[in-house]
Length: 209
Length: 297
Image 1 (spheres, chains in turn brown, cyan):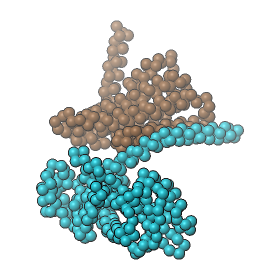
Image 2 (tube, rainbow over the protein chains, first blue to last red; image 1 turned 135 degrees about the vertical axis):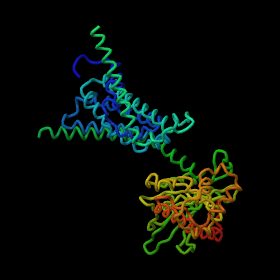
Image 3 (cartoon, chains in turn orange, blue; image 1 turned 45 degrees about the vertical axis):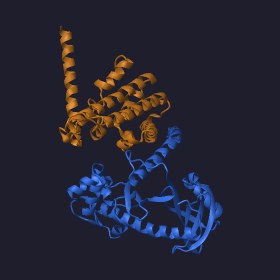
Image 4 (cartoon, rainbow over the protein chains, first blue to last red; image 1 turned 90 degrees about the vertical axis):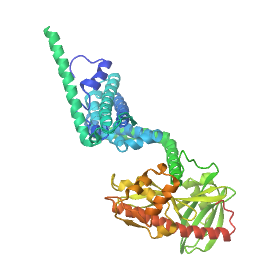
């Protein structure tokens, strides 16, 4: 975290690519494997996480001076749990069909390591506006990851996107199963690493040349 | 040590603040949530009666609820029904367990208000003597079309393999099963959870009272033709469905693979519901007739 502070745009990009929660930090793998079976599920859970992440990051960065350092983890958990309850109630009231599809995973957002980690690493040390953008970027990164996985898995497993049939048949039913979640995550990690490798090489060439 | 008060105060304040936020969110969403639940139940009601988007319910179809209560007095127990009257109010009829009429009281509560449990209790406690304790047992929803009974809807629950299973059973006036909807269950997904699927719950459709009284579960594979008919009813004409039903449907239910206990639970549950209901509604009808109650049902 040394060096000059990042601009807001860089913070969002950081969450999306450089420190993508699923593909680079390898955090919150459980929902990534469990619920990314369809594009819609990935989108909805990503949206819920985005909201919880932004709300918790803002809350913590506002309250950071009042939180006793010895009880910071319970306080963070409490804050996350509060916002998760809020979104749980809101979704169940206004989007009952989506809520049914998400089931228990909405309540499990409390335990997503990515949110707690961002609070501890970033929001507790930075003012409100960078914390907001960091939370936004991280949430967006999570949503992007979930949607990428959902896209691959739904397309290959069910031959559909957002529930609409796009391919004439179901190419590989295997991709709907949880096991395939690991394959997809591994594949995407490899893609991220390869892209990083390409960037590095281009940079070195520039410096030399 | 000197941090203790700060920690305690900090945590307490955090908890109280989050409780307030959660409470506010709850207050904000409770109305929509109740409405959702009501709509869901209504949809289950129409599904159980066999009405769909293509085959909507007639506009004149009305639902009237009859609530059953168990009453305790110091030296005796009996039961009572809240019967909707033509005036739009309710009347409370008390019966002994063997079906004899005890007393009748008018309640000042409309059908709309009676849907709230608290309002019913208030109305009941204002007419019953204070020594009587009463407990809500269950309700019967009676579908009436142009003054004629079309169906009975019974929201009931019974023990499943893991937890209680809540169902909505629709019966015709002659107690033939019109439809079965599973409202809530927590059986194993893929095994007992399959009771929600059409190929299981539609097996109950069309069973007559005679067949239900001898209903049992058999551990045989579901015939392919029958399964197709149960799963995609809309692809078959009425005559075809009747033919297939006649061929395969008797007083047995094909058990789910790997979930015999759940299948048995549902089968016995349905059997008991129908048996008890058939007896109770006969008694209630007799009382309504002999006491000249101007019931809407």
